[in-house]
Length: 287
Image (cartoon, rainbow, N blue to C red; front, side, top):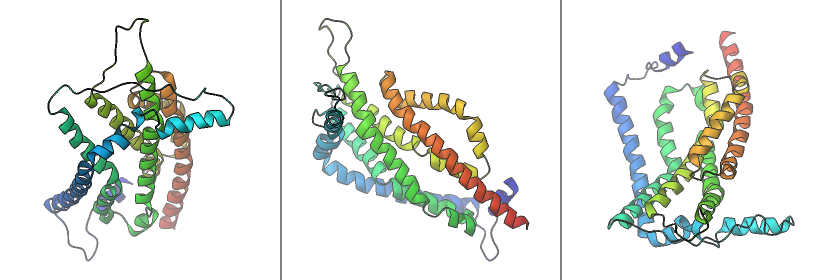
């Protein structure tokens, strides 16, 4: 496998060999175009920063946020009363420096640009590594941009619409002691850090099936390895869940653990299919 990958880096017949500097130059332009996409979308977000902040960023802190209304309606639908209805959030954020709101606007614009431009960024990355692949591998990888983007946006939506509201609602209403000595006044920076960690963390974590497919294709893992490592994977997923969720309660961590564990099970199925394809391809090469 390693020899095949090394040989792949050599120029094919009729192709001009690229030097290391040439590869760096090509990579540089892929990065530049990706940054331009982020900046353009970021500028649009910055121009509409008031609307973006009120409707999107501060959404999980609003009592009428869609996730709260949906969970409460679902609770009534299955005759649980207000069991799934979350208490209202009564909290205001603060800034501690003159430049805090401006720098937070820059952060929102840049990270929003990155999330929105993610499919294009991955397409630029794919364009860079595509010449190193064989035509058959390119054929097998068709649709990779769609699947990578789909899992990323699914994870980001899960973090924003479910994990984020649940976490912030829990933390905003959590109190210690019976007196009114403590009043929560989180900073805007703290809120943005937690929100972005949740969204990006879930988006990246949901790429597990795609990662399993790629690693199986290049021969680093097999379905048997994934099956035998399931008990260790549970521990790793629990750690990832604890890192992604700023809330210390076990309920929010389970909200992350359950879908990640299901994705791990899906990864085994995908790895099994990719492994069979790779075995069939190698058998055809030897025949």
